[in-house]
Image (cartoon, rainbow, N blue to C red; front, side, top):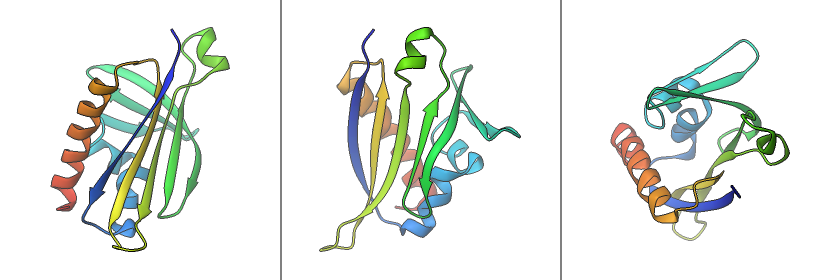
Length: 131
């Protein structure tokens, strides 16, 4: 099944410095993004959603700015074209508002479903940070 890139962004009333641990650390991610997130000695993150484990490697990050997780291949097709999630903290220079920009590359080709999913996840994050 072909993969597609879904992108969305959400305004969050919190500083980039405050938000970064929630997108960068396993404990921060576990509070809002998945049922549980752990990281092993090889720096492989294990995201647990609805009883299923999904392993990802952090392939890029910049302090207080962004993080990108590339999911480890589960099929031959995944080896050639891996799924990933990139979480980017951006500031509107004019308003100084902070946005969480999400790029989700996967085989779910239903933008409405993905928008609902991310809205619910980011709602959880906003509840935690008060934003």
